[in-house]
Image 1 (cartoon, rainbow, N blue to C red):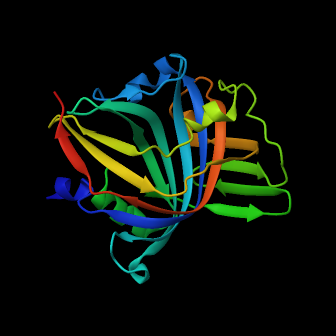
Image 2 (image 1 turned 90 degrees about the vertical axis):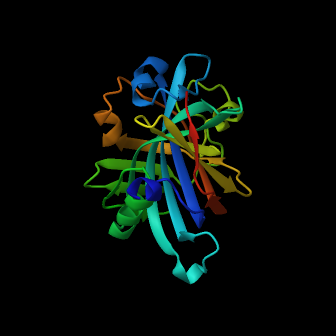
Length: 245
């Protein structure tokens, strides 16, 4: 029963007030051991693989079809790897593999760990903003991000492997699918997200540090892009399970 509940047994919907995503490029060899055998890394130029940090302010998160008054507002953080999966029909799907998730409320940690495999923990999330700089940080999780509010023309981050923002948007996230693997049962859980009017806008990152990336012992993750979207209706379909090999 517990495993069944964790497999996204019902659709969920929410309103994304904002979704801020930082994508880091890493030599593909460094991320290979972080994903299960059923998945392959989604790479760029057959050299770079990508790990992303997504920070999402959700509103009215609830089972799909339930009234908004039954929803809850949460700040969610996800650490994910860009991957591909070839399904039983032979179709290759682009998506994400979740390494860790954080939230600002114990209620989301409790419910998230009942109905998903996303490993939620609760942390402090602080935000401040003035005319020129927006800052998001956590003392407990040891991350800090500073963004410029007054940039009109935004260049790609220094040393990004991408030549243009058009290339970078391919790895902007979130991708249509998220995957979980049950190694013992050899089953893949596929969760499909559905969005509207998803137009990522580049943001200028002044400074950043994520302790979780240090914990992964990545040698030199390079900030490859940073995007934000605002005011987007979003929902996740009920999870779909298929056997793998």
